[in-house]
Length: 114
Length: 116
Image 1 (cartoon, chains in turn red, green):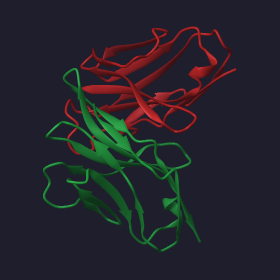
Image 2: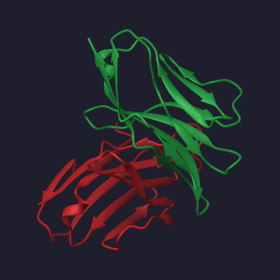
Image 3: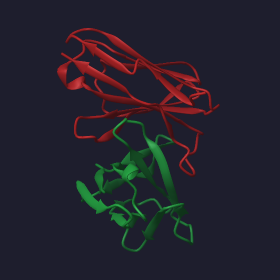
Image 4: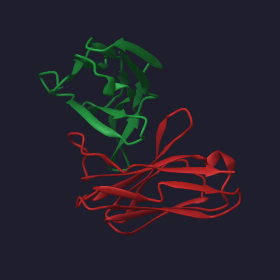
């Protein structure tokens, strides 16, 4: 069983479209994250949710809207996609406190905006 | 705020030799954690090793060891007996706190290439 699963793994779309990436974790963790990895491989946190509640919201355009229907799911919806949104998006989860490396990542979703 | 610096964009090593990947950090928190992750070309993020700021001994996990020098604020990863499968991006990360929740702040990564 995959601990943190993301769908889709690849997403190619036109500028201006709206798309969603889904994430589910079966680890029983309280906290979930979205990270963005740009073309230079730099990983930056976007959002963090703890038990369905938004905890961290970095300076991300409001075209990005995370939604957590329950603590096992954290979806990312992106409106009006732009070329600069092309990246790999990683979902991750952890217990509330990251103690000893318990940040588990999904396999990533590569978004390409044309 | 926490900051992680990895100054080596790329490193090369011969198979079976040891290699050190550099990582320096900056934080005002008295308690923190340092992590290393591996990202092979397939893209997944693989946790390698963790060092707590109060740990007395350097962390080791198999062929991976973390050379933790607190006074110098460095947390270098040492890979012994390199294998071809070690070729990947390596990220150093630090546990940071924001809004009562913890997050990992990542360095820009080092691309390691192991030559046969």
